[in-house]
Length: 507
Image (cartoon, rainbow, N blue to C red; front, side, top):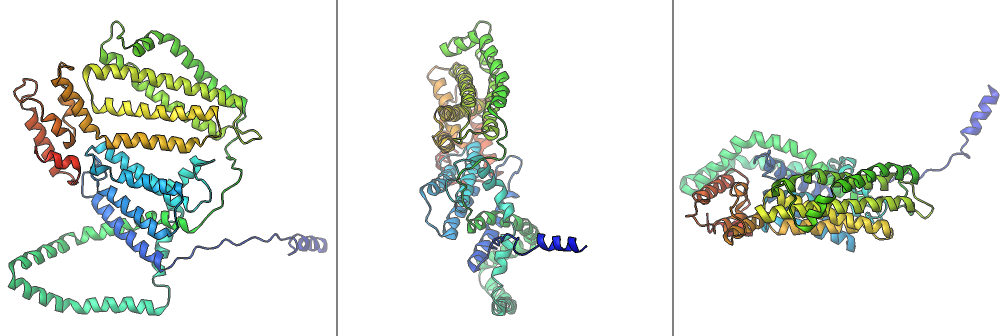
């Protein structure tokens, strides 16, 4: 026992204990509390709007009001953080504000939804970048982006209530001030009611206004309390993005992903069967590829059959290839220089080239289809998606050839440009313009009115050009206008966009 005691004293001797630097706990000030309260108000508006419109169709999110909310939160973030942003941080902020402006230039619901999601993501990265030293889009960018968007608000969920608590944590005097204000408001109730009754009897307009206010308070007080309770966790999650900026983590000099466990031979062997499949596929489809590139329609095919034959399957394969490349970059072991082995880069380069051939072939077939039958929403968006994916794969191919380029930055920048082109071109207007002008010029034998029925008011100025006495068009314009008016009346409407103002002339 004495020996054991001696051993224990040696093991737990204070001389052997390695000092650990204590983690500095976050402190929250009155400023944090004020911003937390502001975010509670914003969250109340968010939740209230969400339950106002048709949730199933996403009409509230694509209405445009949520874009304004994101822009307001971005401006608040600038004031809250209080630091001069770097060039990269200004790029995140600028991209967020740019896509928040989309509802003013387009009424297309799809691009409004996409632009709102992208604006929110850029704002998350903007706030996250203040908590990290160095470039967050460098090595380990995928994990950092995931942490910025998904993990950060949950990691800092308690920051919201702690910030609100900071407003009352400076002593009893602050609590007394709050109590004095509440008591003063209670005392004022009888006098306010008497004044309101007297003024209502003196003026009919004020009487109507007071009655409307009382109706809202009496009818909506229960739903507003429920909305407020739902908005609290939303507010704390949103405030968590800002609270994250109070803690700065050092960047790792040599980042090595803990998932990088696959040697180069293993990665190459995993990719080889996929490449063999592509080689066999290209050999079997050679006549069809040549037809697509040459603008010729193979025998036995209509334009629709030719364009649809395997188009969406090819899109799926391209997405799978992108996932394969991302996983290969994550799990592949780097050499002593911190780069992927040359054999892995060669295999990934071949995979990129094969994917670009698939994209080019699919787009050639789609162009034939559009030139013959015109545009629809599906044809427009799938064509844009394939082009955007092509930009990403071209940058990835360059990265495999020249690993020193900032590939993630270029891919995000390239995708941002493609998304901006999509959002600000107002797709509904372009679809209608192409179809109507093509029909009037004789390029198309018929105009697909059914496919344009669900287009927003952006399409109205072009649809209005169709002659009413045309047997293919008769009655369509009036039905389309009636459908638009119903959609406007039954949704959360954003009337200040340029297309909406132009459409008012026809509605």
